[in-house]
Amino acid sequence: MSLVGPGGLLNQLTRNVLETALEAELTEHLGHEHGETPIAANMRNGTKPKTVLTEIGPVEIEVPGIGTGRSSR
Image (cartoon, rainbow, N blue to C red):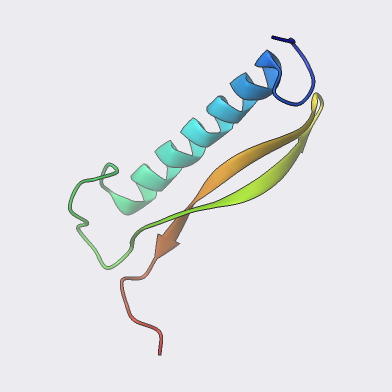
């Protein structure tokens, strides 16, 4: 396994740190952990891929989504 480059250890570590931070921020915003019952209308709504440009190069991450719990017709 390589230290740098796509799929490298540094890339994976950066991805893990960013995704963990985003999950923690969303948990704080929503007021509940992933898998718990929502206490308001807003809830987690899957993830979507994003590319973050870093000093070590582009890092692909999964950004958690948020939904309003309402149907949009």
